[in-house]
Length: 168
Image (cartoon, rainbow, N blue to C red; front, side, top):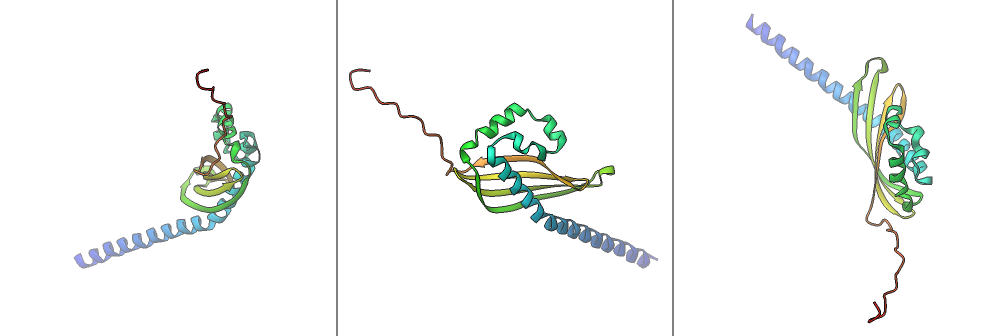
């Protein structure tokens, strides 16, 4: 009797381990499968932003509830401050650093992916972090952050001639 009970418990534990392994494997497969599409989407959004450095250029790509909640004036000001970067020349590396899946009832499975792009622009390099949300079969932009690199050309201040000695 005890032996039968122990066999049942051990079989149950092994079954749960197998199911857990299959679930993790399935999520890993989803992450691997979506990474190339997510990378292309993130690069396309970055390229579109870098044509004008304007929030309006990428507003249609944002998740609607995020776009409604943004202060457009402040967001526009942040992007216009990056204009000196110029156009996107090349993406040197792209890595999907995070992938999450959740079930959202009537919307079905919702995924969020975070990608980090190392890119070179006309005016220097930058690290771009993009979060994409896929819901009801549509992938939209949830967040974008651009951190200019050390090679970013700072604005050149006009030279002010020094006053001759004794005339200051």
